[in-house]
Length: 36
Image (tube, rainbow, N blue to C red):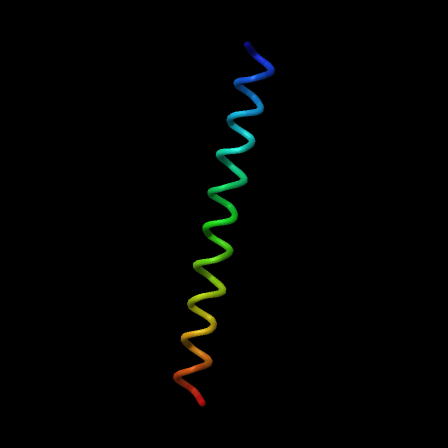
């Protein structure tokens, strides 16, 4: 139980981190599109 819960928390943290990375890269893409 404890191991599965920790694994689930790690997966949640990874997905949240991945979402933050994609939103940051998308913002940088739109910003570079504006400057060009």
